Length: 145
Image 1 (cartoon, rainbow, N blue to C red):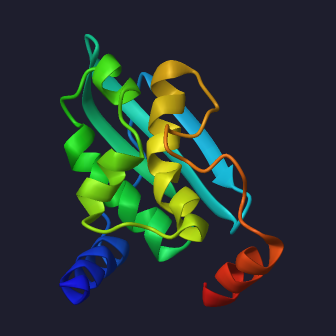
Image 2: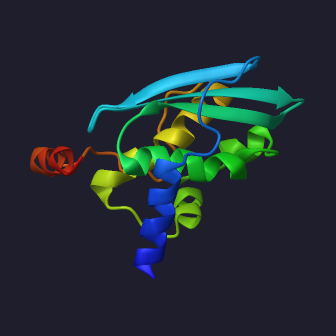
């Protein structure tokens, strides 16, 4: 079963959905994951308080880019309050697997920038570990990229 999810993630990494720039847009946000150097931005067009369209852009590891692609279609049509309530569990359900602590911030970066754009926050989504991984885990993560 894990192999199916790996292929699913790899497909979204190689063929990202909703990737690029969106003009015109109503809100935008850009952020980085300092642990591995992932960079991601989002531009969102709203209709009332709902996401009408969005586009991600940036670069980074397969998990960060694929996660943004995977959640992008699910976010369309959601209200600002619905997006505000999303957390780590939303990402886990969409990915179909649990991410290790060293990969969790990679996976949550897409949701972080969407919430940042809509809510004006710089906070990581609920369920993100409070402490960053140990230095040796970060070194291992960087070597895997």
